[in-house]
Image (cartoon, rainbow, N blue to C red):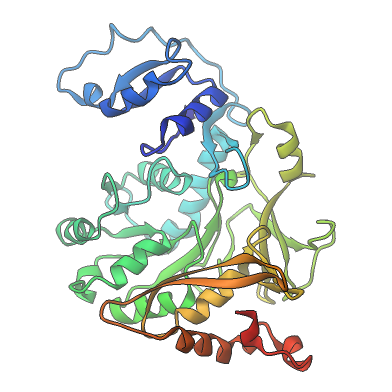
Amino acid sequence: MVVQVNPLYQSSELDYILQDSGANWFIGCEVQREKLVLTSFSDRLTFISAEQLIETGTDLSSKVKELPALDIDPKEAVAVLQYTGGTTGKSKGVMLTHFNLISNVFQDFAFTANALQLQSPGERMLGLTPLFHVFGNGRLNSAIYAGSTYITLEKFEINKVVDLIRTHRPTIFPGVPTMYIALLNHPDLTADDLCCFKYCSCGSAPLPVEIIQQFERKFRVTILEGFGMSETSPTTHRNPVIGQKKRGSIGIPYPNTDAKIVDLKTGVDELPAGERGELIIKGPQVMKGYWKNQEETATALRDGWLYTGDIAKMDEDGYFYIVGRKKDMIITSGYNVYPIEVEDIIYQHPAVKETCVYGVLDSYRGETVKAAIVLKKGKSVPEQEIRGFVSSDWPDIKCREVLSSGNNCQNLL
């Protein structure tokens, strides 16, 4: 089993994951050896440096014992322990089996590569998402299966990324929102630079519709949004390559994947199109469970369905839309506010480069909505202008009931 860890983890973070997983080998950069010395289990953990592995002529035969013959059940044997971010407590080890990971590769290939008539081998994937993250790991698996060239960097640095694009002309780019925002705001990048892209996808977090529109107008490249989780190897939904694409939607389920919206209270009743509830998923890419955590497993996996914790809705055509996380939802003055909806409005302001909306405790409203905003270079906007800009659009998404009760939407900000 592979346990993927972030190279930037501190000793305390490494200590927890390596203790919880029971890891016996650690492959990393030489500088990380110092972190492992501080742990209480270094006597049972064998360290091999990446530098040593890639030395020309290095012979590992004297350092590793002969591997035993294994009879692996792909549906039961865990290939990867993918630890989640732990935003609600200790990180949980997601058990992804060989069957989970390979299933998702086949699903991805059937959904995108066949439709685009991609060459196998022959394509070049710009792999900038970290390989310790389930998104990056999944794209690497797909690249290996298709025989694609995989172009990567140690870390995302926008100028180096632009140089890579101009030099190697990648044809496939799976990115995350911050990468698209960085490319969009690069002063020298042109549509000619990105004309090599046959297929761009976005995952890991919602990409605001305004950013998609700006990116597609400027570079004449289509971004296909999708959805996935550590618990689903990772992809479950994608906007189709051929056929209708809906901006702001995560698209339709992958082949052999079922998805539906259920009520938030019981998680049992399926909701009709247009109503918001929890997104639940069933498919061959859904995890086996959480490592040594039966309680969390029982909460997440019920009757074969994975309860994602994401608030979503489905339209009449079967396209799904993520509204927010159950734990991210802001309840202010008794009304549910989803940060992504407010962010979508703020991004429409011409001076805004990036924004993040969140809730803070409020003695009167319970919670109140706050926004952190980064302005574009050379721009200066009074706070009151942003407030007024959001307030003018807010009724379109949230405040009909508030307005009819005589309250002012701006008071929610």
